[in-house]
Length: 562
Image (cartoon, rainbow, N blue to C red; front, side):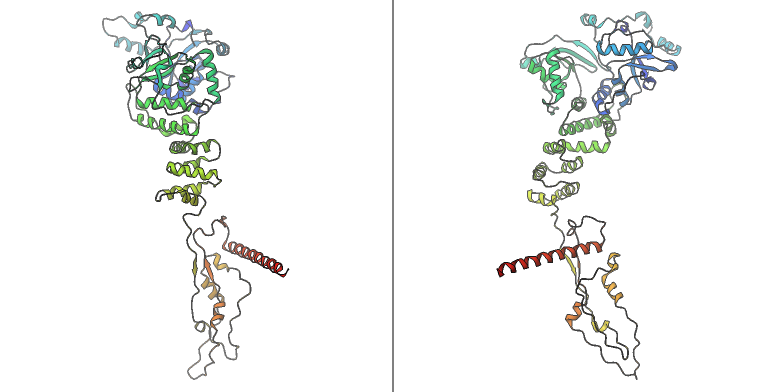
């Protein structure tokens, strides 16, 4: 966005709440995470290029050019943004947008509108002016065009807010030696150097451990563009601890330029480690296609650096309150998903590959990330042979790993539900009581009390079992009889009741077996089943087993009879 009418103009700070879109234009459908790199760049270096606005009635403005910068500033929760205001009609603004999309050097229609200063501001500026110096109005000069400013000795090129390109170094297009690689002086605070370099002067930063996917479509498109037009967007570098230039943003551009032996436009800026890590992370997060492994590590790097910078106070600015919520908002996700993704920075690449391939849910991969790298590889190996992974068994494996050393067999047992082992079956023995003591004496002329034989089929569980009433209590309730008065001292006593044999007494009780722990869990996963339904299904299984044994017996008899 360059024009002769812009020469000598100073951007105005316009409140974001006063800026409105032009009517009839479709808004950008990209998610918030696509602006993460630009948001971070604005928070660190400010807005590099002002917006172009047209004034409206009521003190509001319409956006003519700079939608991405405006949206990024809103995501960064800024209050104002620098802008150039031109007095043009709405139709002129629409026509300019359409032409500028094809020809960036299209002249801006209308006349620039300068910010009017109030009388109070003018009086304060007059009082602040040092004595013996002419007022600011008499010494203001129009800025030279950029093409002339480059050649002018001692003049500074325009740079991003917060920095200024104070030096334009001579191009270095021949392959460098070891001495030449370390011949750069680091810029001071707020300064930046611009230079055209042979790709051999630049190297990958040590803090950048991210890979480049050469098979991705966006990489192939970038390769074709650089091959045809050269590297147009400069890479950002800093002087490293060893004195050489390390790339903070533009790794793919430098890689392609190295293969094609093209020069690389470079901006050298001195940044601390946290700012450098944020830029490296943003350079990877804005990629259209990024693996889960790289995304998790980039998010972790950026989050840690943002938290370290949150409490620091830079010169001339307030402390920034960076939080997980801010990063999650930039990435267009909730905090819970952000934390799970960042935990995957501790997962092995094989686990993350399963997530990329759609064979593993993020929640399950999150559980696996708590395990040691060796155990993670065991889990992936078992998944390759169709051992099912679920939230339940991977969470149990995470808990077991805290107190035990795991090997391949134990990991498989946990994942398949065999470890920790279920408890032993607990059998409650029948209560031994004297049958004679429990049996009341019969009335006179009454038939002797006898115990009915045990039923052939197993009786159904009483309802008391479903409500938790003890079985013995239910049995006693079913055997209640009328109370018989005892005879007096002078009355004849009735004959003693018949003594029941031990084997008959045992058959009168129902043996109760209690299965606890996880013994039946893999057979009865429906927790809504009642005890009666579980019991019926057990009897059905036993009956099916009896029928199979009977058929097998008949088959064997038929075989021997032949």
